[in-house]
Length: 328
Image (cartoon, rainbow, N blue to C red; front, side, top):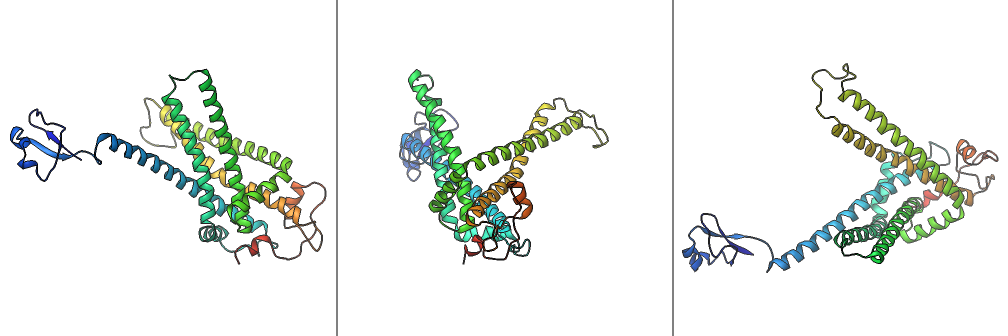
């Protein structure tokens, strides 16, 4: 859509719709010699234009969230494949494939792209519904009564819990996908059944792991924050030569602390995925094998002694692992 724009002097035809092909032959060019017919917006009218723009914004936001979740799912599946290759190797490290992370990444791209995209789609739909609820709450905050506020709070809480549950199930489903190579739905069902059969071990392992990793994040961000505070306040002048005085050091200090926490969170997420993968493989190993000479455990004796205090794992003999037949 093109509209009239007057730059030199006021014009009665300003902001009127015009056609650039015939603009010089119309009355507007004679009445307003300094006016021009410039591009204003797409569409046949402002209401239609704003309607399309809002729709495109929502579409772009949904696709962006979907892509972010897909990239996260691809990384989780690749890490799970690498850790599962280590666990299901009978003779460590001889049976571990070379470059296990790159191998698992290649398998995930070649065989499991659809499953990962489907899992990311489910999570993205839940997150976009959460955003819609938050937007509606911000727009209708003044017009809400006590009942509507209560319903809004209940819906927000339900979607928050649903998002956490789907994230947890997706991570375990990606582990099963990396081990057995099945589709997303079957892997989610198998992972859920396996977790329900070991619900006590799952609860204890997850809580202990999350608590230890949280302490690690706090320790790293706190150490970096103290070091940054000493540098910004010139308590350690030998580290940096030259003028380092700041008039207001709280903003860069908080930025450093927040950035170090995010970096620590990204690094510790690898360890979290490692613990979940090894634990899920361990539960599967205990159900498939009994530690005898015919069905030895794949778990290493040291790890077996840590997880089960009853007796050490017997000597293992070479046999095929579940992950060895995944992509044949």
